[in-house]
Amino acid sequence: MQYCNAIGPYKGGLRFAPNVCEDEFLFLALEQCLKNALTGLPLGGGKGGARFRTSDHSRHEVLRFCQAFMDEYVRHGGADVDVPAGDIGVGSREIGWLYGRWAKLTGRHVGMLTGKPEELGGIPGRVEATGYGTVRFAMRMLERLDRQIDGLRVTVSGAGNVALYAAERAILEGARVLSLSNSKGTARFGDGGLTREQLDEIKEATAEGTRLEAFAQDRSWLEFAEGTTPWSIECDVALPCATQNELDEPDARLLAAGGTVVVAEGANMPSTAAAVAAMKESGVVLGPGKAANAGGVAVSGFEMIQNATRDPWTRKEVLERLDEVMDEIHERCVQHSGNGKRPDYVRGANVASFYRLGRAIVATGPN
Ligand code: NAP
Image (cartoon, rainbow, N blue to C red):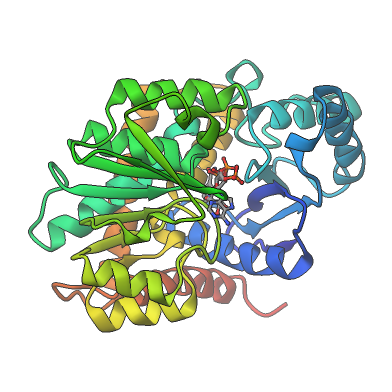
């Protein structure tokens, strides 16, 4: 779905999942377009993918599927045209295979696709970027409310890329991470929260394909509650980092009743419209995904710069610049939301991104 290239090449993730459809890509592409505009980088908006569950297939089948996908995509992509990245079901392994096919078909080594393995021109820090950026955004939201994340209770949903690195950054900032989850249920940790060592164990196990519920079976430090979500756990900060529509109105009410002050969306549109309204009504401050999870695409933008200049960035440079971009996004949202003590980040993010796109479209003149 190539949505808008007013400010740069189409840019968004490829999603391989069994039930994706055109409507889903349409809303994701619009969201991506607005999100990319918010970063301040020259990135247009797009999204795409296929009905394919990577985990149902052998390594060889996934490789062949990626190659077949690129055989078609090659006509639509290009470093200045359309630069996809990974998303659900598409990690750096798949991106490497897609890129390999692209390079073979075109005979070129350019910045087509981001989230590449570093050996192929990928940038250090991309894997952490979305989760780390989401927590940085939540920290700025908390500061606006005269709070610090250090010592606060944080619930995280999901156990994938965004969730694991949001949990990691939250721990690094001194927060207590009380949960992770997946489509089968929720892993709860004790009141002291998940430790860095325990998180590393989870990261290692899930990277090898072990599911959270199986991992929990022989560990006493976490309890896996099947069929539940993290939203009934009392927390100060909630980070929905799994998937769209995972947080509905009753969940939002539970969060408010439990004293949650800030929700920052690591996933794309995880809160339903009813949940967004309930949070607004009950005073829970919401950082929408298009702002809070923009760190991933921002670092993809850095990867495009790195590939175009052929001048490698260090992880330190990437993470420092990531925090600056997240702070700038936060500032843009505040400015466009009326600048109050409790900014309406949903409004601020929409207005700021529409404003940037609108100015670019007007500047090109009538066609
Ligand atoms: P991922 O690595 O594939 O992880 C997704 C996680 O969500 C898995 O743990 C999955 O559990 C869980 N999940 C899926 N459906 C669920 C449901 N109905 N209820 C509870 N958990 C569920 O994907 P990701 O890259 O972390 O992306 C997560 C979200 O962030 C998506 O909305 C994505 O569009 C968004 N996002 C990602 C990036 C990025 O850089 N990766 C950037 C911006 C936004 P199962 O294994 O049980 O399915």
